Image (tube, rainbow, N blue to C red; front, side, top):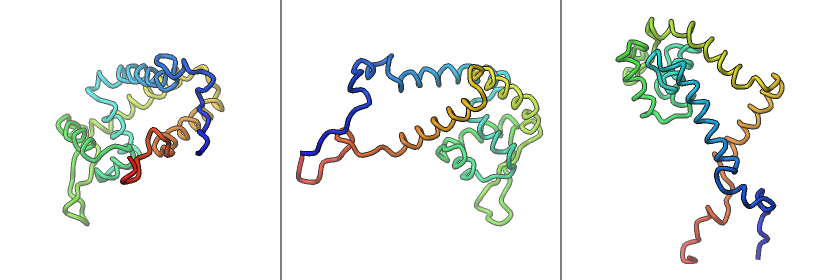
Length: 170
């Protein structure tokens, strides 16, 4: 019989339960950060998805929907719904791709382009405020830890809890 891999919570079984466990604490943190960020976006009629789309277009105007979806790690349908609302609100314009007529390119409308001057500094100030307890080096380290954790969570190792039984062995 294979030896069971040690659990990170073996010595701390109560930390598996919410609200003490780290994933639940991170969930609460994301909720708090989202609420604060939404305070910046709401006066402009924006959502976090709209913000992400605008950021992509501020970096590179004229992207395809699929390129935006890939950069934001979102489903294409989710981005399409956001783009529909943004087009209605005169934030973006869709134009046919000159090479492939089946594809639309997304461009900033005047209103969407102008929001960068307001929203980017507000977002920067909010990020500075939320991470004020961290030095720039600590902030970079935290960002690296979060990126590593996202990669780990995105590709879980096979464990008894996630392993599918072999056909005919269940």
